[in-house]
Every structure is written in C-alpha cells, then in structure tokens.
Image (cartoon, rainbow, N blue to C red; front, side, top):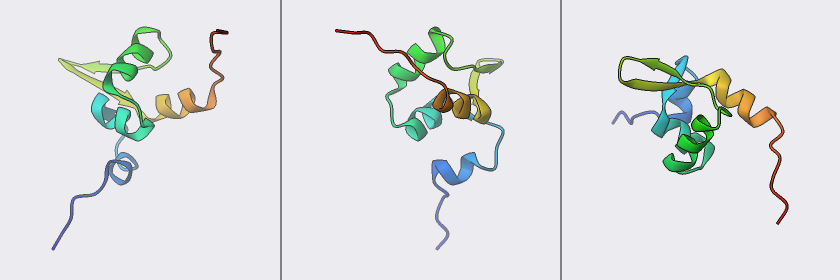
Length: 71
C-alpha cells in the first residue's frame, strides 16, 4: 500500500509550501504563522489567492535571532 509522503518529505521536493504546511513544519499554529508574516519576519509569495512560503524563508527565519520582550 502506498502512503502519502509527510509534509517534511514533500517540502524537500518543492520550492514553496502552503501556510498550513509551513505552520506544521515549524510546530506553530496558523495564527502564529500569520503573525510572523504580518510582522515581516517571514517572507511569503502570493500567486493569485494563494499565499506560499518559500523554503528558504523558513530557513532564514530559523537562522535569525528573534528578540523577546522582557517581562
């Protein structure tokens, strides 16, 4: 029986992934991903109505330093 490849396996074959797939790969909610996009911390590409996250944008996000608020 053939099984569907996981999000991580499929992401290595494509140049850009959906917001939902990106959120799953990062282990965050879709709302958190939308916040990262709104704060310009995660670059996206729009193709018509679709919002795609380039793989290199995810890598850049994970490599960059993110300051936190002191509580």
